[in-house]
Image 1: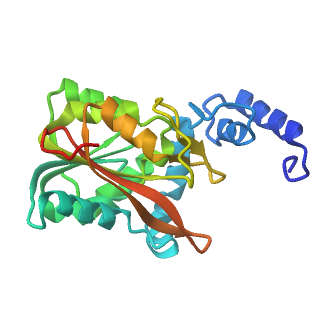
Image 2: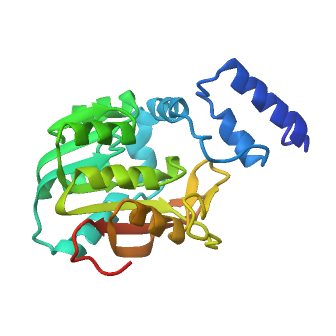
Length: 266
């Protein structure tokens, strides 16, 4: 209310008080402080906020996304994977990062022998489990889960992340963690939201913005730098629209990377 009345300082003070009262930040006060320009966007997206958001969203997630927003992220990723490996490609193991209720899992299931999904939200995992799509489902933070998979010597032929990285500021840590579990010649395919102008350099945090909708938007230079940091090589980096909001397509990027030397130069 203070922000709408033009009282930016008062709004910031209120959000700081909310953060003091709830240090886990279930309601995203730190994101609002970043959006107001009084705090940095890095580290503003707390796991508690994301978990709370999607636990509440889980019962209506599929309808809201597919019908309300004309969501096509999984199909766009499938098309890209088929461009990279051909329409008859099959994968022994696949990992669905931020699997949610299983929309991407359902799309890729016919191509995969063993399908694993991980998500931060127990509510989303419960809905995914009810669909019977996955061979294995886990609840956890993505980089921590990937580190545990690496320690357990588990590897995947295909790793995907459909519109998940809008909740991560810096993509380099997750790219590095994916590289540790990617089989030789395996594929890593993901989508991000992007912004109109890529004002980035080559730094790890350059080219990342926090949108008014409290999601991160990544420039092409940041995606390239993250893939390079992960010792991966780009096969594809193209503009893509995976959904419609407020009557307009949301600009994004689709990336496919591999650890194999047969990738095209990035």
